[in-house]
Image (cartoon, rainbow, N blue to C red; front, side):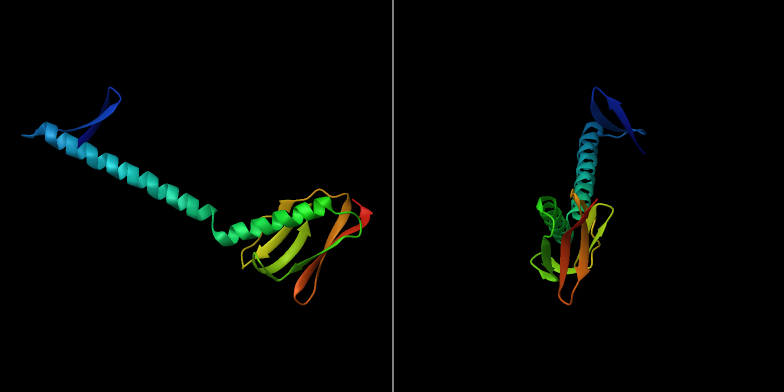
Length: 139
């Protein structure tokens, strides 16, 4: 049976029921335990990075940010055209809701990006593109 004891800032492993080579066993077990802990941290890091940074998700976020910045800089009457076959991927939908612009790219729903415009913003869907109109009345 093995037990873990903390002392002097180092982890020491010792055998409860005696061993002929206590020092050698402790060093090997310490090395094995540290290797397992490093591997576990590395696996959690890889999983966290993989979850957050799929390329499709990033392309959708880039498109949303680009559109929000265009809306921010637009004057009354501007119309932006977003092709469904975009450099960021296949754009499934573009819509405006509560001061955010959403773009669903390659089947992934958009997370939304806030825009700051003094004018109403609307989106119209055509056959192979989306028209984003800035204008109309003040918000």
